[in-house]
Length: 77
Image 1 (cartoon, one colour):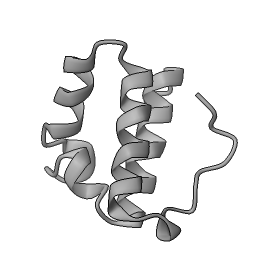
Image 2 (image 1 turned 90 degrees about the horizontal axis):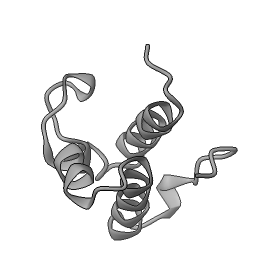
Image 3 (image 1 turned 30 degrees about the vertical axis):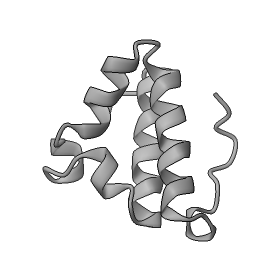
């Protein structure tokens, strides 16, 4: 998982953002079902909105991406 720089989500289409986030989630959880559950479950971290829904905007995709990096590297704040 490369986290040196986040992509410029404002330059990506909604489908490209979704694909990027989906790939990251699958990197965090090797279990596909767990990745889908994370992406589709409303989260307190995102104000009760699921990661897949909030990542439809470029700002939301950045927030989800950062959260996935934190989960992957064990950074819990």
